[in-house]
Image 1: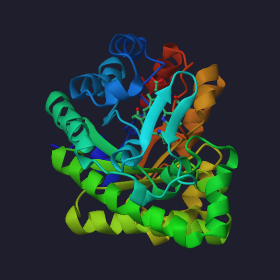
Image 2: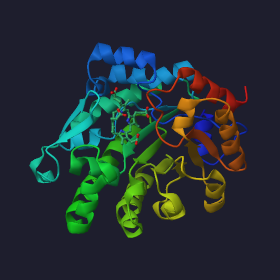
Image 3: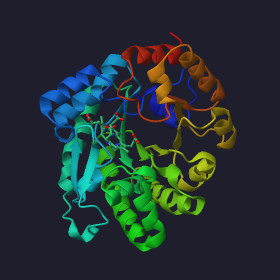
Length: 339
Ligand code: CP3
């Protein structure tokens, strides 16, 4: 029996939108912080399937969300491609050597790193209720490439954008390699029990229009087409953060089954601009959830109203922040479910 989230991804229009939150497992939860302290670092958690499955389930247990998103990270793909990866406390990810200092051919790939992730999916799927939808994910090639090239998060993704202009063939080869590995990785997640997958293109918004076509639309279309060939019944959610007015082209040209909307989009505009019946997800500002107060239920109501008559999954416009009070998430749940 599929649950309401999967039904909505497949086009049903629910009375009450099903919900999950991007980054719903993580540092705003005391039970996550406790387990992280016990196990050491973030990567130790990701590659420990028992711990990762427990963390995936934590927000379901606490809040009863309709979806469980695999606890992992988009940078596991570069790690399996052979790039060094560390998460330093308070500093974010560090990949080394960068793709400015080295070439992909210098790396030794180890796709067996994915086995622990597949095991996390299997364990979680076996543990959660049938009605909770198991979601897998990968980073989209452009977003993953920005980290591989700069070796870390970068202001305006400058190093990757410069490579796109100076040496597009080199960036193309990097994106092609990421596409190939990501398709294998997402197929593995689906075979292990993921019922839908999301492609996170967190830095899609930094590209000029022609560049957006080449580095956002084309790679997401390639991954979606490959998954449609092998797993035609598994919905693909695209999340091109910052796409703005390029959103309808993204949807039309990638073939994704559903689209995530960031907080900058006017939901009334998005509803009018997107094809009828296309499932949408989003677009509550995570900082409004952190702030709380009467503006929170008012905004939630406005988003629900904008998407009445369309398959709509309630979610945020980006990941939930680590300083979000638990009570504000509870307030959000009451407002979405009208309870
Ligand atoms: O949504 C979920 O709950 C599933 C798990 C998940 C994580 N990262 C766990 C995580 C998912 C889907 C991601 C995606 C991800 N990772 C993205 C795309 C979405 C987005 O937020 O834009 C990106 C760009 C990354 C790369 C990444 N991972 C960065 C830049 C950082 C450091 C900044 C930060 O928020 O700490 C991470 C670390 C990370 N990934 C944490 C978690 C729970 C925090 C690790 C910790 O210190 O405990």
